[in-house]
Length: 158
Image (cartoon, rainbow, N blue to C red; front, side, top):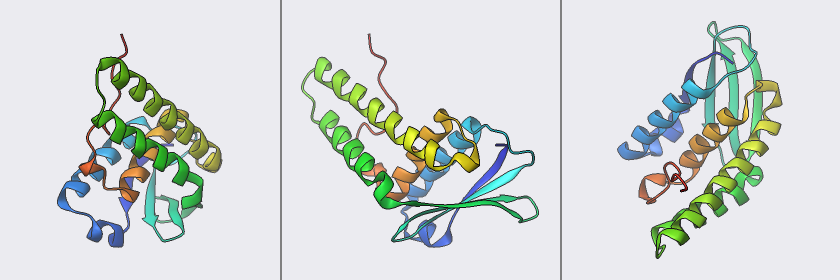
C-alpha cells in the first residue's frame, strides 16, 4: 500500500501530551517506511480512537474512501496488557539473562499482535512488518508509552 500519510483524529491529538505527539509522529514515520502492499494509488490512512475501538479509513488523495475498518479494543486488549506487563518487568529485571528472556517475550507478543492485525486488516493488504508497526502506533495511542522504560526496540540476543 503506497501510504503517503497517516492522520490521527483531532480528539486523540488534543488529549495527548507533547511527548506523546512526538512519539506518535515517530511511529507514523516508521509505519510510512514499512508499509507495503498492492493498492494501486497513493492513500492516506486516517486513524481514530473511540471508546469501542480504533477506526481505520484508507482514502485516496482526492478523499475517496478505499476501505474502512474498525478494530475493536477487545481484539488487541490482551496483547496490549501482556506487552505493557512485559515492558514493566524488563524495567525491573535483575540480570542480563532475565532481561533477554523478557525481551524475547516482548517480541513474541509483538509478533502475535501483528498477526492479529494483519488478519483483521486483510482488505488493506499490509504485511506482517507493517502490521507490527501499526500495533506499535495503536499501542501508543491507547497507552502512554512515553512513561514506559524499555518499550522501544528489542535487544540483540547474543
